[in-house]
Structures are given as structure tokens and as C-alpha cells.
Image (cartoon, rainbow, N blue to C red):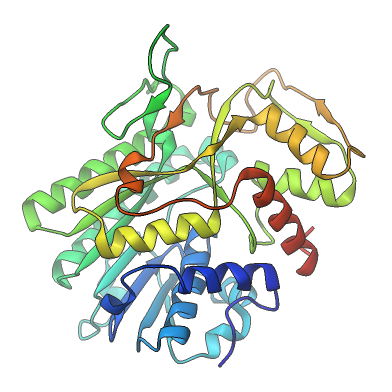
Length: 363
């Protein structure tokens, strides 16, 4: 059977670790899973991981990937799409699901990962960003009701927390029941505000229709197997290291980031799907990988043998659409209580990312 990594040994090692982790894979036996946003970073990694789990554990699992562009899907997944345990579903979450899922098709589980992730799009198309989040999530939740799904995971973001004011003697950790400030008059607020509303929509469906849903609040996630079109900060930094080019920051780099290696995030998401407490939110982050953008840039310079350096090019206006500077550290105690523990630190995450990009000429 065709392996899941498209000849990337770093990625395949990650997928094998996921498949051999202590998860309740038996619950996936003879089940169908739908993944929205399957051509995005998290969605594509979930797809590969579940296929690897199916191959190793012989679960008779079927993975349906919801995509809008078949050509893009084939570029990302390659020969994997020729396997009989995966099926492309061409459609859009903005349309009612009956347009792309046959009423006779059973959907047991859903990972809803479809959303706008590019900050520049959030600035240039804020209405589209909001509309995709709200209408798309509502359509997927309607499907979960009518298909009587056994489990749903909504992929949210740490950005939904907003900004916190630093107070003397206050805990630096942010729990799932804490909320910061989001200015609704800022265009870039469309993303965190819509994430908040979608989370509440998930809770509303859980209450009114008994949808068994968990909410995953992801930190910045990256690792082996990122997409060739990926242009977020972590990809830019890694490409700079490979090309021996200076890292250019368009902010002062003071914003504190919460990070998690892709493999650890995927394990957490599968764990939530199978064993998470319903109608609850969970932070997914590696607390040991908490750092500022500036410090992370310096780390990558060191990984590159200090042959490159960090330089600053700060525009007068936020034309790049970067989120406002934040100062928070996600508390993952709730996720760890399920038995989850991240294994890959920030330095190793970058080393693995860079090696993976070299194997796939993704730089």
C-alpha cells in the first residue's frame, strides 16, 4: 500500500509515531471520517495521520476529504489519493452539505478545520473571512446533527483569547475559561471574533441538538510536511535558514508566541475526537516552546550556524495583517489530564521542519 508521506522520511517518522501512540484507535474501526479544510496544514496532516493509522491497525477506516480544488489536492497528496481508504469530496463548506455528501453516506466523525488562515486575506477580505467561519461552521454542524455523528472536533485558535493586560503577581498562564480584549473596530479582529462566535455555535448545537463536539484551541502549529504554499512566519524563517538569507521582521518581534509541533498537535486532536469531554474547549500547545517572535528568529539564526541574522523592516501601517502583540502563555493542564504530553520542543521542531523542506525541495 502507498505510504502517506510522499517520500519525506521526516514526515513519515512523525506519522508512524502518531499511529503507534496510545490512542483509542479501536473506536475508528469500520468508521467514516470527514475532514474539512483538508488541503490546509492541519487538515492535510490529520488526513495523512489517519490513513497511516488505518494502514497499521487495519481499521477499515474511510477518510473523506472535503476540498474545493482537485488539482491542489492532487499536488498535496499525490498517489495517496489512489488508495481505497480515502475519497475526495469536491465542495465548499459555504454550501449545504447535501450538495457534496450523498444522503446515504454515513459520516461517523468530523474534523472541521476549514477557515481562512492567511493574515493578509483577513485584512483584504474581512467579510469573506467572517462569512466562511460562521456559515461554514453552521453547515458542518447541521451535517453532524443529521448524520448523527459520534464525535466532532472544531479547530479553533489561541487568537480567540484576544489581548491580556499584564498585571503584577498575576499568573502568566491562560486557562480555557479566561478571555482577553478584542477591539471590534479593528479590521483584523474579524478572525478572533468569528472564532469566538463559532465556538459558541458549537456549544449551542451541543445543547440544542446534543452534538458530541470538542473545541481545540490551537497554538501556532508547524512541523515536517508543511505545504509548498505555506507562507506564515515559521515557514519564512525556515526558508531563510535554508537559503542562508537574513530573517526580516516587520514588527519589533515582542509578541509572545505559543507553539506546538504538528505531530503533537495531531495526536491531541485525535485524542479529543475519541476521548475528549463533549462541549468543552482545550488548549493545545507546548508550554516549553513559549517564546517571542524575536527570540524565535534568533533561535533559527543559531540553527543556521549564525550565518544569517535578524533585520527589521517595520511598515508604518499593518499592511501585512499581523495580529496585535500578545502576552500570554496557554495552560495545557486540561489537555494533559487526558494523557497528552507534547514531545517535540521548538529547536527540534525547526530542525525537523528544515530537514523535511530539504527532502521535498520546499524552499
